[in-house]
Every structure is written in structure tokens, then in C-alpha cells.
Image (tube, rainbow, N blue to C red; front, side, top):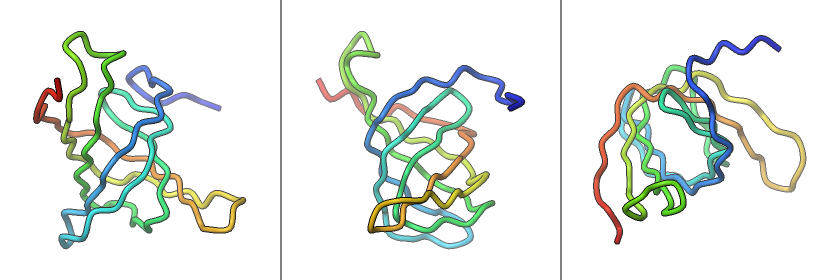
Length: 109
């Protein structure tokens, strides 16, 4: 498969909170990342997302990858693709999203 990504992806399973901000605000949903880079992320969620939706993703980066301890990062981006994943009793979706901007919100330690 051709790799069109511009940044190296890191295979990190991190909890995320995701909220669609456009076309309309929605309640937060939760998920877990499969991988993340400086320009995008792929996460698993039971929540349905539409390609093209603008999203805000809140992720906690663990101490093992940050020298000063855990920190929360808020990322703004767009849903690029939604994959229906087989298996399990509850439907699980894989969501690919761009990261167009981000802000460190706090250090947790």
C-alpha cells in the first residue's frame, strides 16, 4: 500500500475524547487511538462520524513520551475517513482524522 502520510505515525493506544464542532456541536464521545502523528491520528470509537466533519480531540499524552510528565493536548482537525470494523458485539468504527492545530492545555504533574 502506498504511504501518503507526511509524518511518522507512532503506534500509541491513548484514550481520547472527541467532539464534532462543525457542522454542529455535539456531545463528547470517547475512543482509543491506534496511532498518532503531528499531522493526524486514527482512533477507534462506537460513535458515528461523518467524513468532512470538524472535530476537537482531547488526548492525554503519557509521561513515557514527555520529559515533564503527562499533559493534555487539544487538537483541532477534520474527519478524513471512517472505516466499519468487523467483529465484536458492539459496532466499532475506525476514524482517520487530520490534525490542523493543537494546544497543550496542562501538565498533569
